Length: 203
Image (tube, rainbow, N blue to C red; front, side, top):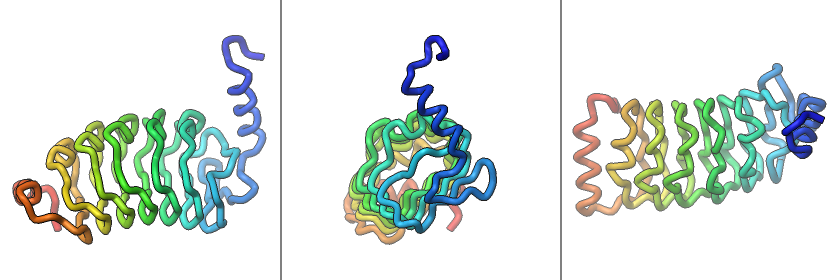
């Protein structure tokens, strides 16, 4: 046993390294795991610890384990579209500092908290379209300085804080269509921000 390393961590390491590909999935190469369309009710385990691209779309997954990125911190590409995720636990994306692409579209998310993506500071593309989002905290994207594509289309948003978007200096594509916007002073502020930033947000 390695000194200073908890037995549970050693067990997880040995288990993951001994099973390079989950039985319910396919592995196209040493760093890609494809679990799409397998009818999975949850995230299967174990995964290889050095997985970089994980495809889990078109399943029935309801939650992302809180410690998922603790053991899979090399993930660069994560697709969870077309599942049944209604909420993301605080800290779900802790240790996700290498993640560049995250697709959570076509789920049942209803809100985004301010600290949710705090550790995912290297994200370049974030897909949240076709959920049930009615609330986005103004600090939800505060750490995403490299984010270039943000999709919030076809949700239930009536309002969106300009502060949430102003925190994204690298933003180049923003999708907001298909939301039931409330035409009030807040929307006027959002509309003005979109006009002022039209030079970097081409339609």
